[in-house]
Length: 349
Image (tube, rainbow, N blue to C red; front, side, top):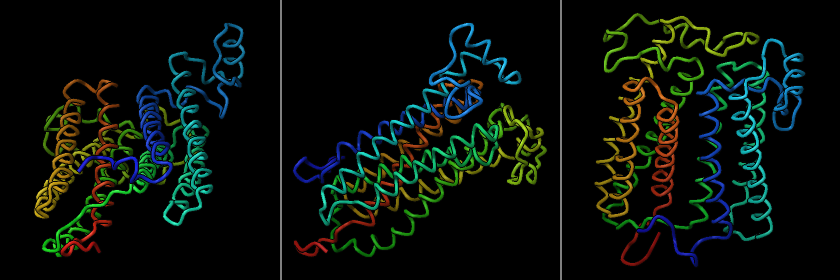
């Protein structure tokens, strides 16, 4: 089974939805780069940057900006990532408006309309979180929510693409029982991956990435001193500037350690899911399982490489993007399992 259906079998709007997914990946990558480059407050105001549509470049513009924001002087290597991220996110919103208009104009019963409308509403909310990320000075709760919102936006656009692709698994009747048993398992896999992404977001939002600079141990110990109550305190106060983080070492270690444990749980469960998918005895399911396993292996390798090479930005961005692709693999598998048609002697049900 090919990844995408033939042109004749796809529903209208497929190409626009697929292109929107590609733009969403670029937006996600730029957002991750902005955060890892400590450029989240590269522009202290919103939606402008020191009052500029782009960012201050001329000497007199920089001087005026520094006078207006003495505590946050202009840093040219941090202004452009933030503004490019904002404009890319805005372009994604425009594409989604196009998807909504396209869906409404089609007016066909099988054409998804509610989903693109929901995606547009969610992107507007995501834009608000982008604003709060700046105005609340990188408050970790908002930063993590904004990151999860980016992953959710991409997943919703991918789900729309799958629906417009109009492709279903054809499961033999002999495997129907296994198919039904697989449904809660794939959903659990999706939830586990989402939780692991949330842990990763909380790790970066609190600058706990480098809390464990060694592997497989952490700070030379299998169980280093950790403060989970502070590390997972979701009631941090609004007001302080959270750039660089405010938690002590034990709290950051607790966060990082939890992310590592989460990675092991995720890997173990997806390996279990790999074998369950292969038990369907279908070539498409085998292919989906194998692709998932390859993505998981790459993600683990990138996670270890982050530590081995002292957290270079390129590897860290790749780690986030492959995490997004792993999430999309779970969305795809869940969608195909829940929409699969059982073939009973040539009759599909």
